[in-house]
Image 1 (cartoon, rainbow, N blue to C red):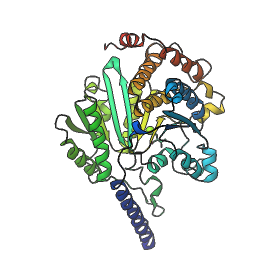
Image 2: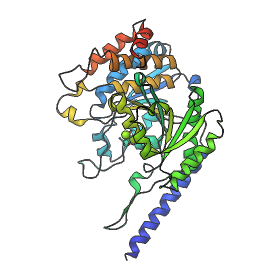
Image 3: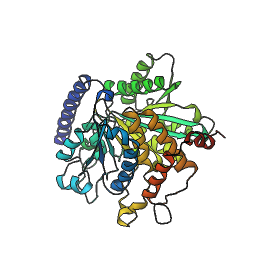
Image 4: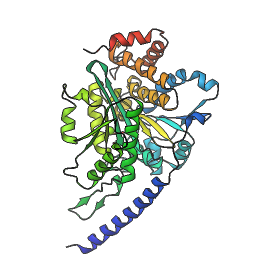
Length: 400
Ligand code: IPM
Ligand code: MG
């Protein structure tokens, strides 16, 4: 038996525990939610990212500025473009987020972020941590909020994916014990589980939703999922008017496909990796990950992004201008609601439903057989200007 390998692994594990206990203290002593109503100007950073990122971010930015024109004029919001979160720059600095870029991000209250390439073992890039994951940790964006709606099928789901823990917390910190054994660590904490569950119940309460469902595999992953679930039910007790239940991830994945049952789910709360997977599946019913936006929410900062990748191949083949900006626009709509303009955010979403799901005057195919991203955003802005938008939407969304 390779005793030194065991000792090395123990030492490594000890260091991980020290770091994580410090993180627990930080979470517990963190300042409360920032009140953006009191902030002027709210600084909105636009981060292009890489691959198709800068192309679709530009289109989303155009619509965002169009919608917040008055707020920008009166100094309530201010836009800033943040450069340097590209795979080339990250690789050169050998950092998930180069220091100067992180500094600039921290100057903004909220950011709208294009997709960024995530390297893995064997890629031409250094195997640095995903910059999405790094940003979620750095800014403590503990809630990944992902809505999925298919009004015609009665689907209206809101996912609250825990965003800083689970297998992601220590993703780059596993141990190559010896030639045979590799170990990764899965961390679930009580403070982490409590804050995500509370946010999900608060959302349900504020939005008149009747049910919150927790998704785990606590029958098998007893210790960490056990802790997540136990804290979910602890918080549920504070909301006696809301029905709380839980499902295992395997059957949940199946039930989302079950047309008779899936409309019953409303708000779901789940650990990071299950949330990553289930939200991709859920987005498929709405038209795919290209149609889904996502909010990464923390008490001080928030970041809004598309849920798909950076599609470097599209850029290589000269097709970047045909990339679909809809998911970035969904993220932008969530940003608008988050910073205090929920009516504008809702209207934006409604228009994206009309343009992307129902009317489809311009369809993007990702190549020159379809529209460009710029044409699509012109179409979105034109539709936003239509005073009869509500009734147009009502016609389209009558449940079958
Ligand atoms: C997402 C993405 C990321 C994740 C990747 C790019 C690291 O899949 O935001 O869902 O796994 O969280
Ligand atoms: Mg994902």
